[in-house]
Length: 306
Image 1: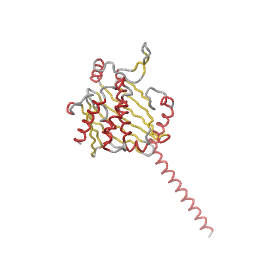
Image 2: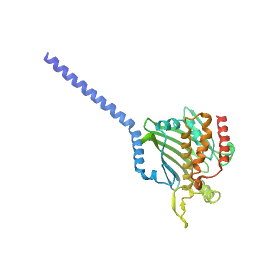
Image 3: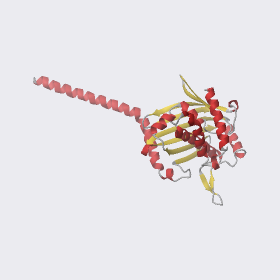
């Protein structure tokens, strides 16, 4: 009886030890699997806290910051913003490639977008062109691969990548990261960048010296003699304008997400245009009627092709 009791005690302890070891192993595997996502979400939350005053005190009249950089072969725009939409709404609206076509078509230079999925993944076939009406055949096609990096209840990360663009530009990246923050709102980061070669640099400098002369971005570089602010120009100015246009397209899409489908397009177009009119020095290109008419026609063309 004593030996049996001792044996049962030893067996119980052995089973408990094995159970604890298995639990620790599963926990370690789970932590390793979730680690990168948790780290990315924590980093975004930390950046949200660090931005602090910049989100409240800025020239954008919204909780937003915009930074840009330029190297020998790359230009990048980086936007951080707190938006008044719940995280679950942001994830439902943006975690769908077809929805991204509805976002991208709002950009003044986007002439067409089509999302397709096959065994190799999802591709957004986008046509980029002029700021005025233009046949698709005359626009430049860019194919973005669409990838959901992470989509959990606490973190969303999406990436669009195009290896080739016009005039020797390449490696286009659009990255979206988002986390829920206080009071049912969402904090997101939108990064837009591309690389360029010699032909791309020459073409951009030619444009900036002719049709693009006088165009500026948002970063303030000083003040004019009369006191008016001076803004960054050149390629950084161009990337800032486009990063802002893409951000405002996302915001306009979210603003109308969930409204009756028959009303969505008209509301999105007016919302996007009204938002760009807050920054006429940087973003004004067309009047409201011209933009609305052009985009309604392009959207109808896009739907007909799909």
